[in-house]
Image (cartoon, rainbow, N blue to C red; front, side):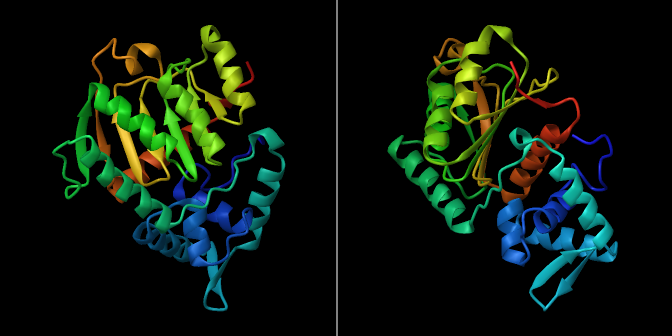
Length: 261
């Protein structure tokens, strides 16, 4: 990648600018689908970019970026190798609502006394494992994962299921030679694998509609029940937006690289 980092890269503002300049999203709904931003948050970002003189509206329902910044973004992303280019993810509210309905049905099948009214709930042990596997396997557009350790287990195999369902899967792991062969398998099946040696958090976000923050790694010890694991699940769009931002920002950091094991 270019050593000169364009203004706003690594933030929602930068992703909105990229959506318009690089991804061809011109209308409000196209920008929303391209960035996955909550409508309220998207309006805030657009207003801040307007105030900064970076974007303007054209023909009442289209947006354009100030020419110099537009050119900078086009040139910056044109220099990125094909293997590093982010595929465009478009997540509709319909898909997100379907996933929320799935969660409501799932808790009924599992006979769990969980309410979605507060938009957060707690899971542990096999229920956390079952939920994580089911929600990933049902991804329609995107799965974002942060886990220091990813090796072959029933949980990590669902990443392959998600790819088969045409979802874009991005996973950030620590460099680990012991899992080289499995990482290669994931890459060969179109899982986008990134490495960052500082990663310690464990997070899963599916279709930017549900986030799981837990102690669970993608390894047999966690998914197979050898260790006690627990975590929180949220469907709160503002919290999910913050989690997504933290993951995308991590991917965009210079110390994070595409796996080339």
